Structure formats: C-alpha cells, structure tokens
Image 1 (cartoon, rainbow, N blue to C red):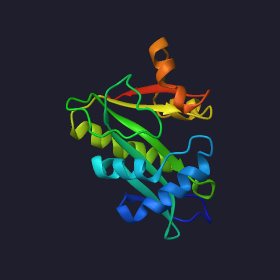
Image 2: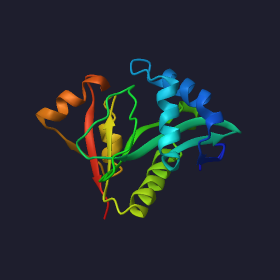
Image 3: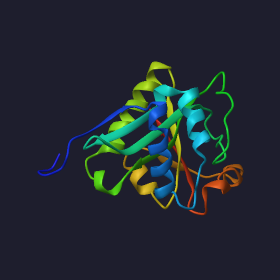
Image 4: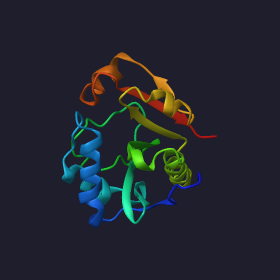
Length: 170
C-alpha cells in the first residue's frame, strides 16, 4: 500500500451487498448491463466465489466466480439455474474495482482467493472473459487467450472486445 492510500480488504458478499454490487457493476459496465437478480443468483449458487472489496467502510468493488466448464461461456445477463455437476474450472464472471481503489493489487488478491477455491475442489483451471481490451491485465495474472470459432459465437453477448482466457493452476 502506498502512502496515503486507504487499506482495503475482500470479504464474503452477503445479500445486503447486492444493491452496491448492482450499482457498481452497472456504473462500470454501461454497455454490458446485468440485472440485480442475475447477480443474486450467483450469490445464492456459489457464495464462496462472491466477494466485495471494502475500503473506507464502503464497497469499492466486487468479484463473482463459480464452478463451470472450460470453453463454455455463460451468456451475459442470463440465469445459470444450476452449476454443472462435474466442473473443470472456476469461471471468474466479473471483477470490478472502482477507480479510487485501483493500484493496490486488489484484483490479484481476489484471484488468489479463487485459486484457493479451485484447488480445494481439485480444479486445475480458472477461466474468464476479458472485456474492454483488458486482456493484457489478465495475461499479467497468468491467463492465456483462447480463440476458436465456437467461442466467438458464445462471446457475442460480451461485446466486440471480448476475449476468452484460461489460467492453468500449477
């Protein structure tokens, strides 16, 4: 932490955090809006993947992840209904850190939490969809871009800059 920066920490998200998660997500992802009840379903289906970033006693970001299948991309703003019975990865649905909380490594801390979740379930991969040309950021965390014709179709709901990425855990 740099001098003058407020300490921040990730804590498990609760239903009471849904309003803040929805507000932050829709403020940052203005062209990729998701409904609050889609976020709520993720909280309900896999609470151990849902965290909020707290700074100055305020929510300054969130991370949402769940078990899934590599190369299968859940369409944006849709209900999962159930998690796959035999997942092979933790799918990092979204990590958002508000501008005032950036630069302190928060995304990396959240990812390491998800690495621990994956390992506890004997899963060897994390997967995500990078948007807004953020793939270099994710590459810095060990994710590699994957491109196939079938993935291109699945990524359409994520916008024109969407890149599917996978990180193998060692």
